[in-house]
Image 1: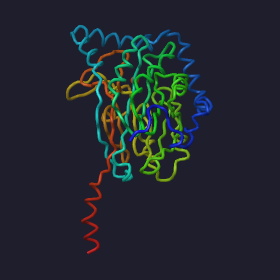
Image 2: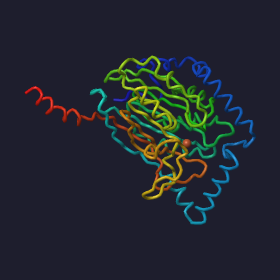
Image 3: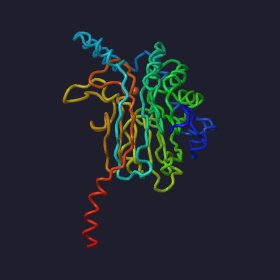
Image 4: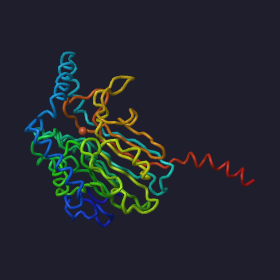
Length: 345
Ligand SMILES: [Fe+2]
């Protein structure tokens, strides 16, 4: 079924993002300029010089406190091993409004690689995990860099390695995360991936038109523009939104988004039995921190991500690549049928 890996297929898609030949900086317009200014300001703070440098003094103190506690309890090594135990998770997602012909449409949703410059073996390990994956669509919801500072010229190469064996019928689409710089997106796009920066693309599937759109990360830089992302969308098109974090849920539902795909939270990374994650680093309800969720008529999926950063450990929250299958929920139709029959009688 899949036709080719990696390269987006312009013949199968059209819309604002399909103008892949237009440079990202031009497409991003004012929002992109604002983003770059914010990045420059942060870099100018002089907090750090490479990818392992701390993001801030308070945050650094917290990170070291967590590390010290875990080491004291003898749990640190186990947590690091957990973070390397990559998994491919299969999840069905049900919709009442899914076009019948999209029933069974498969999406590889992967996020938060946090490729460490010094450990290229991580990208190779992801590549092995995804070696036999064949999907209709592959989406990546940001955070390619490990930290916040330093050069990120290794990222595109690592991403190519990680997705080298994925066969995606409609290509690979990506959005930026809070760790990424604008130039990260430019490098990713030069490597053959399509970045959706406040824009959408019409994908011609066998089940009719599908509007795939993406926004800049909403957590930190806040240069996202959902209006722009749905501009040009045909009426009634099934709509998938890529956003780094689940922090534009209410707005997306109001825009008629059908499926909201996000990462950023890492599922909490450290989860306790029963109570779950203590920290999600996102302004969202707890049920949106990991896995499938619903907001009004919109379905969402927040992946725990495949990488880790700051404290490179995981507990009760394995690193994952999510293989999602869209399913048509006919329960409501089945319930309606007898009622309609009664009305006819
Ligand atoms: Fe992340």
